[in-house]
Image 1: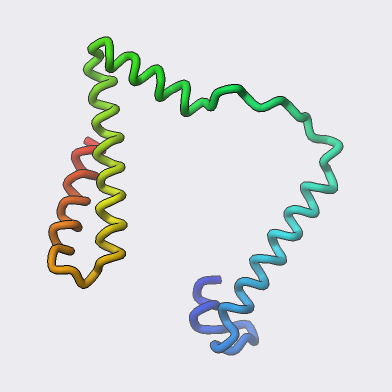
Image 2: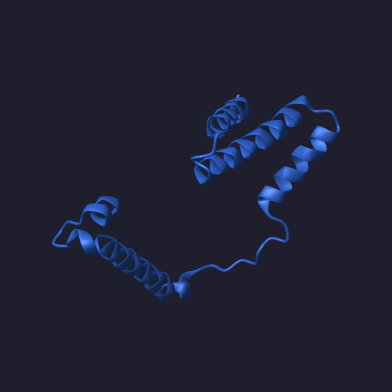
Length: 117
């Protein structure tokens, strides 16, 4: 669909490529909603959890880090560095002509690389 949007294709001129792609995607989404809605009586509905799984894991990791677990502290530092890498990468994409763009890119790479390691 990306190629069709930017170059046209399948009988769609380039000028209407993105319009056609969004129409195809919208049609597929409507079809999916109709399919899910048609089988709703077969669903097993369960109540939502009072606390998310991510919240439980985060609380456990932070509690372990607070008790001195090196693995938990390393994991928390990795999450912080990966988040910083994403933020720096977005800043670089938003400010591509700034004089410090190279530093943003380098810092994003270093934060992400250290966060993964």
